[in-house]
Image (cartoon, rainbow, N blue to C red; front, side):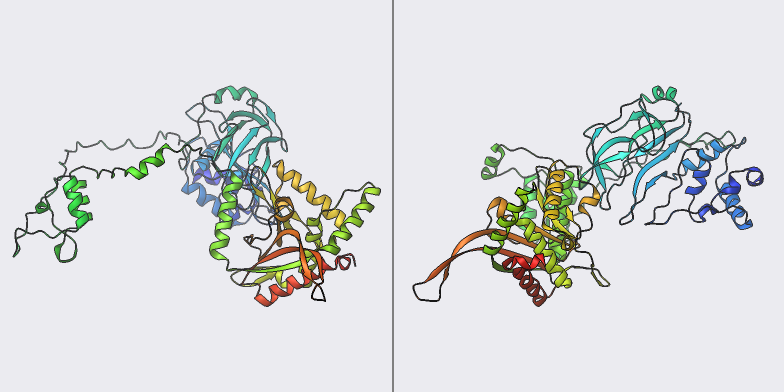
Length: 547
């Protein structure tokens, strides 16, 4: 307590500590650790600094120091070392206004008995709201390089894209724990070490991070009492399995046991008379045989494969490891099918006028040096206008309410070699066809290069998936992309024979099948039909989209 009082009265830093955030020890660590940045993981709030002058705040510091005493010669590093042993994390924060904050986790270490100088442990950052683990694609810095804030350290493959991880503090990269291609690194797991002095880099050549859950090694306390002498403990013999005597029964020559128990006993040469049954009316069951074998230290041998199954072992196969995008796609689609009550509505739309308008617009664009627009661009525009006309479909379900969005942001499914991506076209209802076409091409290229950023695919309110144009699929049903409540599956256009007014009259027309997948919690059947009616009206009369 004497050192705590001295620290309170004479430390200049402690008089300016930001209220100690009464329920969080991390601020105390920040003020006793040079170079560590104060961080508050909120949506948009930033910590405000107030002077420490209230008696209640001094009492908090005194109680904290009293609960965590340090040896004589108290200094800033000693107290910081004590707080680090308590496992208090430190790090910088990259704020995001729309989502949870992305943290570049770091923890400051101090000189210890192992001979390591002061250093910074860099953890795997959380670069997306759903990220729990990531992969190291490649390091852009090598051991010994100097790093400054804002400089890119490495590329991290998240659950949705490959993102650059920036350095938060100035120093030198002393040790790379997880090299290029490291897979399934948990968020917060140490991936690198940085130091402040270049001369300290060589001291981390043989450094290995502590095991998860273990804190930094605590310094020895000279005043600590020696451990009590260990008294010799006599070994206790392990209890032998008790062999119950066979119980007498009216029919002593018959033992009741299930067929599976009898077979298991025969395979292991176990006499049924030595086992007491726990089944109905004292019957011996399979579990009784297994318990008996376990008590004798034997394991039940696995059954030999049958002859038919032996043929399967000769099949040639290759195990392809899961990519991060494949894992998150699988988990989200499984969650969608298990929790969202899907239903499907299909309609055929005549696209003759749409194709004619597209030809006219492309002729004008080519003459002016612009890029051509696709049928998918027109479909995205029609879907966006239909959402504005029927806003109930531009919503999502929560446990307490249905959230209806004012913005119409359309996700577009893009298939790449790495997996399925859904970049977003924001405010598609307010953009022209040329702008939509250029943005789709740009995002599709970034998806194929695996260079999408979170803002390129987050914040969508509806999804369009087109397998008709690229693959010629006539009709299919898509899985809803949560938390959205609808997705449009677009098939290919085909020519059909249409009956005319007379018995021998007929016409030809091109029709495209589209299927709307709806979340029945949000979109009732009549609402989904109303949306499809509006969408069909824009497709069959495309001039109305230009109004």
